[in-house]
Image: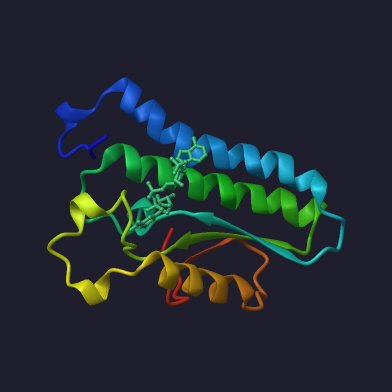
Length: 153
Ligand SMILES: NC(=O)c1ccc[n+]([C@@H]2O[C@H](COP(=O)([O-])OP(=O)(O)OC[C@H]3O[C@@H](n4cnc5c(N)ncnc54)[C@H](OP(=O)(O)O)[C@@H]3O)[C@@H](O)[C@H]2O)c1
């Protein structure tokens, strides 16, 4: 699938696929995981989002399905955190932007990007693990990037 550049590129099946992979499957994880935690258990659940899913940060437009399905993911995680806080208060939910990582997904779009701005999958995994291990005081879901900086929702 190629990201939609203009409204004429929107197609039902492509939009459904984006939402199935990026929003619905993670929502089902949220649903099934909640009952596996003990009340008081300390844990993090991190969801692979993307900066392009930020509603506030959207200046360039395009990529309708990918953007919207990641924005939906972010909303599902933020909403679920309210319920998780009540049912399993030690479990913190996070949306994570890994940066540009050299994978099948990004390769068609990252050719013009300097090599030092694209992470190998090993580097990306290290950044992700270090972010996951930081203590978190927030009672709300967070949206952070690979540097640990907050991304606006
Ligand atoms: N790469 C980037 O620069 C970048 C930037 C921002 C955010 N992200 C996010 O990071 C995540 C991983 O991206 P990636 O670059 O690693 O993508 P990728 O190279 O396309 O890999 C996607 C992975 O998801 C699996 N997958 C796809 N559909 C699935 C399904 N229905 N059920 C279970 N697994 C499924 C694939 O499994 P198979 O290998 O078995 O097909 C593959 O392992 C995505 O959520 C992406 O949006 C990536």
